[in-house]
Image 1 (cartoon, rainbow, N blue to C red):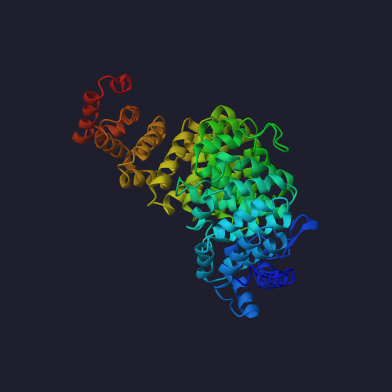
Image 2: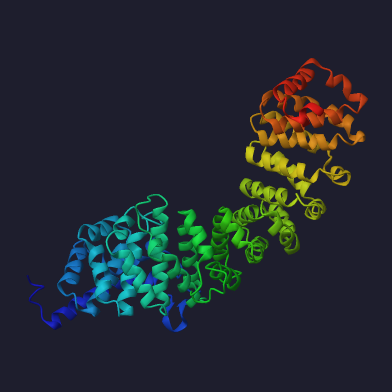
Length: 550
């Protein structure tokens, strides 16, 4: 009742009170922003934090200056927003005050905002004052602070409340209306990132995709190409949008036509440009590689990405950071993942990858992170895919990759994935006499035998290991060592364990035929268990010409 009877001067006192309440959090998180410079300055250690990451500093400042403002502030602020809907100055300061409360260390402050229907009041205020950049900026930052999780994650359980109603539309219209304001684009990308992340766990959450969220994000990145914060959070948002939907992957690759600076290459050009401009920024490079890795899982998207060498070039550029940044493990993991997917498109990408130096780059990463299993697995996958072509195979051999692979097999003897990819690679390079000499190594043979023994269920390990032995057995000078190492027994064990796997039976029969040309192997071949494995294969695979002939 008292609020309704207030004079203009008294309302101004409320605005002043909001201004005091907002200061601590704004100083700790948003003070690095300078509109005249078009973005957040590198000098601010919190200039690129999410609201939760800024929370410790914000809470400390709030406690020092405000002596822990009462929870009752939230309902009063919301009431003022609803009572004076036309006052833009009051809205701006009230939004900033809600932002300050949402970024304190006390969870109950957020709860009070939600309980008092603060989301609706913020959204209504955004719609009412759509033409005011300062109101939009303050409102979007308040929504972002309410979107992030309390433990510093990228999305909170409460983000569902923001996704309801007209909030998403208000965010997108605000970004479109104020395209030239970097702070609005930054906050908008931050909210969309949270919504997209939440939609991966709950498909009912509206992440704005159907309303053109990706178009808005790409336009924000194009308009503010020199703004680190917009680029980083734009990439994060695109990444989360694409992780939640295969359709979004293809849509991003094809996005363009009338977008700002799309260059005829869809929304990906914005991603490539960000990675090129901020080549020394490990965070942007990591998120960029993660996005390219995500997109390349979709076969059609990967094919369309491969019309240019830019994705390959940008990943190589990003992975080069490992020489200067020991913490670039995730970056290199995502980069190798993208290259592994793209390398499956042999006709389109094998030659460009060879020419651009992918093999050397991947080998360098394997040497830089010898204890990171995922990096080793994905790197082996890249090299195995590339080695299917003679020219690339020769480069793989010259890079000493096989020695590094043997080390990885010993280091990760308990990893099925590593053993599978390593065997794939070794088989791919073991196709002629020169390459077999490079692969043939007593310690290497023991690694392969060990893998076959330890992973009898893995058809990939068994078939590729048998293929390695089949290739090596062509060389009579190597047969005795192979027999001594137990290659024949390993092959027949694989045949016994997987009697219905036709391709495995075929490879094994070829290997045994090759061994039979060496008199020194006859005693082993004539052992009952080994003979029975051959006979069972012929009976079970009567329609396979390869099995019957060999």
